Image 1 (cartoon, rainbow over the protein chains, first blue to last red):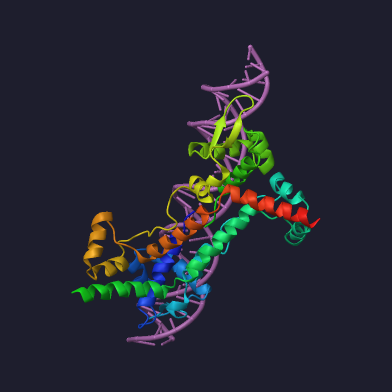
Image 2: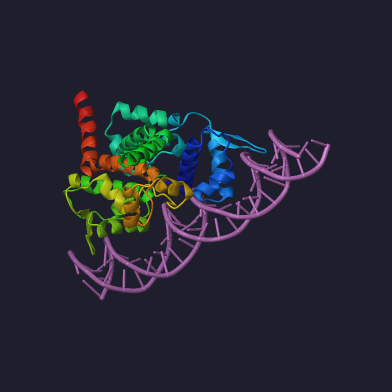
Length: 163
Length: 163
DNA sequence: ATAACGTGGACCTACGGTGTCCATAATAAA
DNA sequence: TTTATTATGGACACCGTAGGTCCACGTTAT
């Protein structure tokens, strides 16, 4: 259970773009050089980010990438969901096991209705995990590319003050 | 980024054990039947749980498994860490990229010391992710096998009251 | 002694993460 | 218009690992 390297690269690439906001259109060469990743692989990642409207891209001479919206409107959650997909953190593999049927058979009109709607019994483990996912998402929604830039700048100027 | 099926099976198996607490020693047959998983695969999982002191096992006739400690002292985090390993949620793949060196070169005695200790620059993305991991862990530490059993019982008796 | 039961090792398969290469399209500069 | 630059998308390769099976062995109760 770990985030993929693609997510890593994507976040760092976006930070680079956010930092170089003034001169728009950062090429894949500069990006791959800055991150230490091959151009070909990073292209794939940038392409994905573009398809999801995180960045814009222009081909041709002097082309490159730029953020599609302000850095403080690109959250970690946005990026992670693009790169990792929108699948749930946890999915009960068989809600029709005896264990689940046992719980379901304790009657309950509500559970019956649940089953009618979704076609499967509910899973209490899944419920707990959904809670965990909500918390995680909430946290990741509050962190943006801009917040990382701010943090970097803060440390920088803090050091400057001490001198 | 998803929890593995093993974690799923492990949690459900432990819930079964917690539910059948009275008659200790639940066999692999009963467990695999209840969860709808093959005996051979589930054995592997139970074995892992035993090695980490989550369950006890006795071989021989009438053998089987039982919880090694009270159900309210087995947290979701415990189980997940056994099954998924203790690796971090996120690890920056190259803290020596130009991007990181750029941040590091802004001087800072503190960052220098960091580098001396760990041998690598710090990564602000990693920092954010570590925060996310802490939150997630805190949540998972508060959910136990017992809490799921309680929830199941609560729903059950709630239905009974209505009748 | 024998049947029931858990253990650990060897092994297999499928899939996805990581990564490369190339043909193509789009764009700016000459 | 031609050429150089740059992003795009498809095809493909590699490989680690999740998921799963099988079997020989050790242990225990009857």
